[in-house]
Length: 259
Image 1 (cartoon, rainbow, N blue to C red):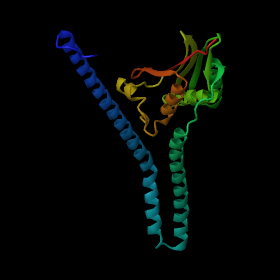
Image 2 (image 1 turned 90 degrees about the vertical axis):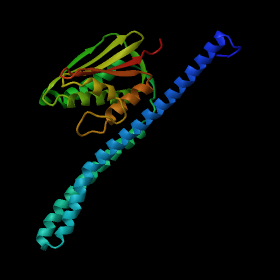
Image 3 (image 1 turned 180 degrees about the horizontal axis):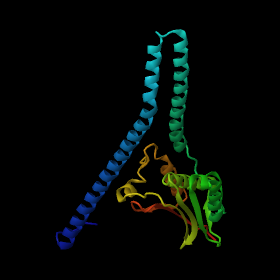
Image 4 (image 1 turned 90 degrees about the horizontal axis):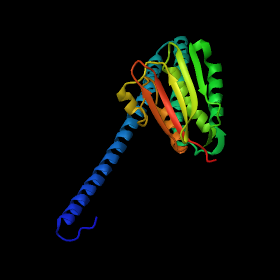
């Protein structure tokens, strides 16, 4: 605000400008702090993921060094076991690196006019066949019969929903119900993936979309990062509703396609 004169209005303008400067400065500091925290979380997660296969690799190499003094037959046995372990752990490392590499190279969506019900039905059909009663997972669906046209990349959206379904399955190791729904909601379309697992605490819900954060003992947190990236590229939003012991529901809202 312009500061003219020395009256009360000028004093008010001066105070207002000072306040906006402080808010701007605080916002910049907050953004920087969040960025640093995100990088620290990435470094922590990457170190954790790489440390798991590196430890058996180190032990295996040490065993091979010690086995040099053994008779030929015993050394051959140790060599076979060791090379098998090395091959397995190297493949594990490649998988971890591949996940991060795939995320960094995620393509931009190639948008086309599609019906959201088709994407949800495709995901439902895929996982009903591959898991089904063997995993004690019951699938439930509520898909609106009305057209739900959206501008979306069907393959990327399929990938995002698949990640949510896989997370839901992981949350129910002893079985449960996995619900998939697609319904019109105002100017958008709501896609929902819900499970009857143990649920999440309020603290976990707040951190869930932090880069590379995960509630799994073994996981990179990239699944939800991919989902969030896909949803953002489609100008949509994603939220989670959950409580400890009460399951979890992930809700994606995408804008309807123009008529």
